[in-house]
Amino acid sequence: MDLSTILTFLIFGLPLIGFPFVIGIGYIKKNYSMYLGTALIFFSFLITLYLFFSYTVNGTVIQYSFNWLPSLPAIIPLGVYADNLSMIMALMVSFVGFLIILFSVGYMKEDPNRHVFFGEMVLFTSSMLGLVLASSLLMLFIFWELVGLCSYLLIGFWHYKPNAASAAKKAFIVTRVGDVFFIAGIGAAILYSSGGALSISGLGAIHLEWQRTIVALLLFGGAIGKSAQFPLHVWIPDAMEGPTTVSALIHAATMVTAGVYLMARVYSIDTSLLTPTALTVILYVGVVTIILSGLIGLVVNDIKRILAYSTIGQIGYMVAALGLGLGVTSIGLSIYQLEAHAFFKALLFLAAGSILHAVMNVRDINKMGGLWKKMPVTVTAMLVGALALSGFPGFAGFFSKDSIITASYGVSVFAWSLLAIGGFLTTLYAFRMFFKVALGKPRSDPAEHAHESSWIMLIPIVILAAFSAIFGIFQQGFYDFVENKPVTGAFGIAPLTLTDMVPVILMLAGMGIAYYVWGRNSTIPQKVTSGASDFYLLVKNKFYLDVFFTNVIAERGVIGLSAVSDGFERKAIGGLVDASGKLFQNSGKVLRKIQTGLARQYALIILIGLILALLLLRILMLSGVIH
Image (cartoon, rainbow, N blue to C red; front, side, top):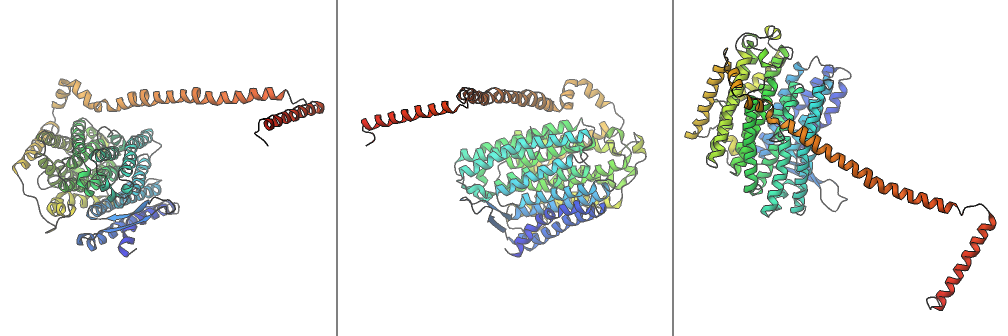
């Protein structure tokens, strides 16, 4: 094991080993845990940065694996695989994770359990780093489950709040549904590859198209749960009950990007692993998710939930990019959107956290207003994030999201039109949020007394705003790097086409409409909701998916199945056990009657038994069986 391999293990191993010490040192002095946790992720970032520029950019793939259980006949590999795709992911996770944890130093400084919080945040980041660097499906799944565990712990960090505890359970249960598909996908991959798919590169050993389709769809089922795509997206809005920095980490750098990375990783092994059938399913799951989340985002008033639905939609673009079936180009489009989204979504959540910190955690945007004057740095940064999210020319989202929309035109005009409409909806809800937060007069007492946050919170916000604004200049170099093409330079922008202007026009129209409707005192929203009350109620109730899952799937399906299972256990299995018990009990009652305790009776029974044995022996001798 050489130095590069050791350092690759340390990227996730250092915070993984260190997180118990983060919690433990907090019992001595709580602030120490904040400093140690921040330092661990910063060192992970520095190691990743060193390996990236010393090895990855030079075309070196760091690969090492070992047999986990050598006593077994099958080889179960664990190890690391650091190529262009995994290292660009590790660089983003460690960098954005560090900025979010640095922000948490100011955001959580008054929380009495901050030492536990920082320990769990370190474990969360470490788990995601381990996931992207894993060399085998088993190791990836182990860290996949650790990511799920950490999300449960952090969403429910304020567990004394009933909503937070319920949200944590909901996230855990819904994502477990996806995990069942993931486990089945791993099993199918191992079966169809004759054990070769224990390592990720072994997926290429699956040759039959129908087998590849089954494996791809099962693995995508796992991605749907983890990356909050339709119909398993319902957990993510409720997850906003956790601290805002948890939301930033989940949405920008860890949890929801895991599913996208999984599918990109599979696609990168062999582009034929995602068959035409699988690609069609992936494309339209992403498209449907974008439209639904965009509509719901327009009627939500909770600032964090608006951002949650924007995450669902933006992940939908990443998924749709993979579903376009453009080979390595799809991977480049998807991962570039993932990285750009990490910057502007972390920015938006941290800006929201800064605002909530100033307005005593009032999350209703209707109770804000006029905050641009009171928090100029935070709200200006939020504007940068909103522009990037909407795809304003020059900002990160324009080069990432709009490129996916343009690329879809050559695959399906129908998908292209829906993706473009999704971009229009994104602009509407992004600037509805911004105008209600920033403009006008304060509409509540907390908003009236809002103030700018401390420097420890503003530094990460400003850095993320800068990356959200300039990340587009790396577009062409990023595509070449992820697609394993010769990189002619770090800077470069793909040439614009006529179809690029369609989403720009829709975006500008969305900004204008948002200002006309929400940027000034207007009765248009009330008129629209009253004129289309049925549709408004449908969207307001999130298309009744939560009702369906609760009333139909859970209460009638799961609880009904549980009742049947309980009845079968009680009457069939329990009845069989009871019957066998009664059989032995009755047999005992019969045999008990010959146990009289009288010696002469026992002697008589022995004599009779001896006579019967001798008679049997004589019969066997006469019949020639015994000589």
